[in-house]
Amino acid sequence: QAVAPTTVHGVAMEGLVVGVLPCLLERRATGSEAILARYGPPEQPAVIALLGVGAVRQEDALLVTLSWRSERQAPLNYYLSLRLKGADGAELVSRDLPPLAGGYPTSLWRPGELVADRVLLPLAAGQPL
Picture 1: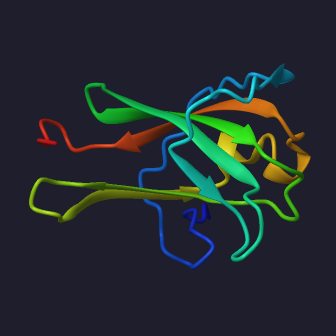
Picture 2: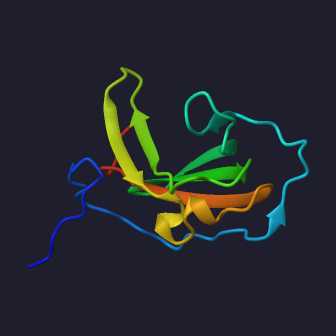
């Protein structure tokens, strides 16, 4: 019997969609990239920086692209938590998963490395955003 995937908190992820996730390995940062957000342990230097976010509506999904830069060696493997909310603030869809669907854990990212990730958020047909 197949078991539905769950988040690290045990929340079921029904309708899980995983596509091909390209990764730009060994691409080095210049240091001049604009930073949208930084992540890492509290009260310590950032481990990962978010450089870019994009989204394209497909028929039954939203393709989210994320551009990351490793700031320093990650002490553990981080998870990505995406939440899509409607204009009224209600959560439409959420995904919790490791970057690159776990294919390239954050603890392996080298300082200064640029990493591109893509995540599909499933949507109901005709669902307004």
